[in-house]
Length: 143
View 1: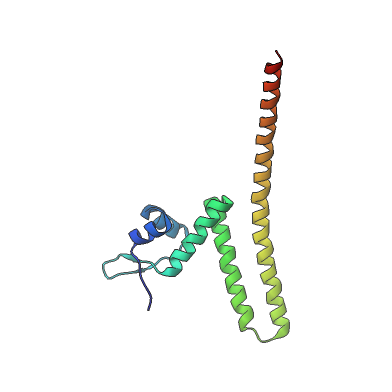
View 2 (view 1 turned 45 degrees about the horizontal axis):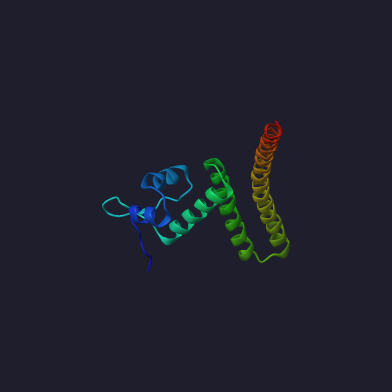
């Protein structure tokens, strides 16, 4: 039996506002939930889990909404490809599908590498600023 949650319950569970949940749905980051007879959104555990993954990618990885959309698309692509592999009997076709799956994972790694490179550059700039501050402090301590 599926358990359904109202939008306010999901918002509390994941720490987002109801407005953000509707916006994520509008952007395609979250699949539209079923509706009650009264038109209320009815979310499932799958919606909650997906939101937790999105929040994790946003917070831990610092993804923008555009990057989140790319991430979600690649994650869905991965799941679909994995399911196709499981349903394929032919060894040659299976190997081809595994190659496609690998390419999806490579794209995910490239997205993460781009984010890491930006973070390294930013860290380097701040580190250089800290070095200049330390030099200024030394200069004034000597006077």
